[in-house]
Image: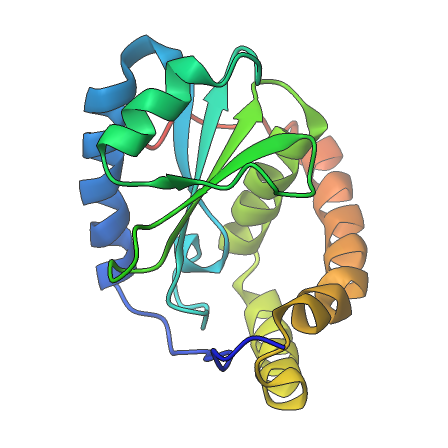
Length: 182
């Protein structure tokens, strides 16, 4: 169990501003290596309560070798987490003492890249779904306290139910991901 308690906060417009600042720095450091830089996760959905962690997805042509994106990210102070269990991404975190930031580097065009973009866009277009998701997160944060893995695992059924609705919406509307956020 982690010593950090899971904390869900009301939506904060500063999250968007924080992403904007980080996005500019990332774009400057990565240049064309980053095919896309996107704000993902709950802090990317206006009016959605969230853990105060900025999630950023960087889309690249290939995950190996890691050097073309690892070196610039480390120069910006991000810490590479090579032990990440998800093999479809490379994962970086903030330096100790910095504001919480998770960077997910994924292969452009992959399912793992498209999933968080579709979910984000679906929730932005369907604000009626936010209250139920907030209530779920608040309840799970209380139930799981500092058990981040338990909290994340318990949200999985909601994600899969919602992504099915998001996919149906995408099929009806012809959804395509918009331009890169940075």
